[in-house]
Length: 287
Image 1 (cartoon, rainbow, N blue to C red):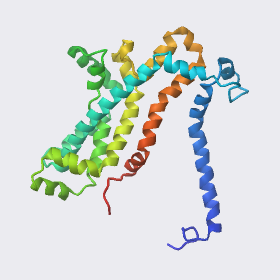
Image 2 (cartoon, helix red, strand yellow):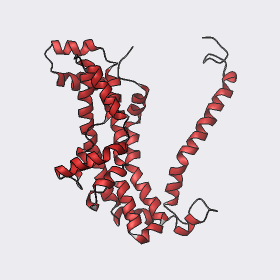
Image 3 (spheres, rainbow, N blue to C red):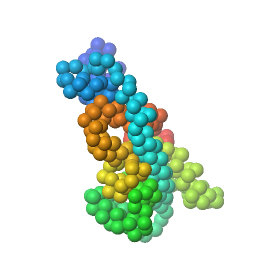
Image 4 (cartoon, one colour):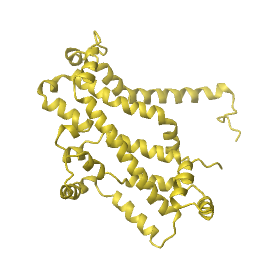
């Protein structure tokens, strides 16, 4: 395509477009990153500095805010609770979602389309509508106020089933059929053929659900009352609201919030390539 705006155009004709894109991306980046930067900067301020709107940077960095949160507060414990509960939940969601998605794509049975319609119909239900029946079930099983209750109640992800199904549909069914003819079981075909070819979808699903579970507040706050089982969002609220003095110490609030975000930033830094590929629909297939 030979137009004056194509990549083959002279550089001087493309400079305005390049500059415009850079300015738009820079503006978007500033608006996106500013809340996080403000939070980190505020975590190093005194309470007086935070309330003073005439200054942005701290007059003297208060590193004691960070060390106090790390070594003299229950925040690290809440982070560990959220991290390992989220890992277990995501692992179970990946297994259950992959198996159902595999059945919907590669197994032939009459009610396959009806089953998928039912699964997707449940996704349209407001999450709050499931709280009461889920609470009653967990109460009857005697696993309220426990990590087991948090995990069992989140074993299946409808979003994950849909995302993995979309990825599996990009794989030629002939590959799975050939593996089955060679004696591979469905389980082996799923994890040794389908899974490696849709790695980006799995990582995208795992990362998004891990973040959602890690930051979840409403459901954990309904079924857990003991501080030993608090996740970070509930733990932050309990720490700063119930311990009255901390409720007004905004520097500590910002420091704790910054510490809580660090595991998510590290996780995204190591998985961003696959996450972006998964969002873009890459499944490992070459055209």
